[in-house]
Image: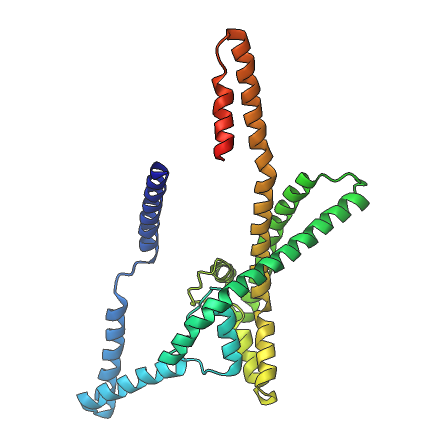
Length: 301
């Protein structure tokens, strides 16, 4: 066990270090962001001084006010529809970070909310994934019976076929949503695929948020109809994300079923080794050590 842990942590360290170096080489800049920002501010100050004859203190206050105003403007208002978006994003463990609780009481309530809500969301996604997997199994059975005229369907093969079908459907669905998202948010196709993969792996950087622009547009257009209507529309905008998360849960469920199918093959290998050991002991006249070893391994497992 210790040897396995040492190997895995070494692989993790090497992989992480090489990945960090790769991302550094891809994203490094000749000038730091702080230096770029200072150059921009200094150019604005110089223009204000030369054109409007403003003092140093006045230009500093004006620039600081504009920067602070932009920060305030970028913060989303806590409407009920935005709260619905925040709840679903939090419970799905995506956590984009565009909306976060600021008050101490809200942060405390959020901790209690997660302790109860996270298990509920995980169980719901698990159930949704199982329903999708059952639907895929029905499609496979229907196809084999009515298209290929096969009435005898092997349960093991059915689980493996369901896994393969889910693995095919998942990237296809992500590709479709990426194309739609690139049209809605005016992103490139690579940006759309990146946004959905970051979302579905629940990394949730927050630099690209799928369906957020659509939700904001619905909230702005239908705000006159009340908070309930805009909240329902926001939930509709979140449906693709929840559906794809359910599809990921379906794939994981199918993987578990496939592993259960492969377990008997391990017992078959042990049985073959046991038979070979017995044959060898009869031929050579030596005691059968293999059978005892296999029996011990079986008991331990």
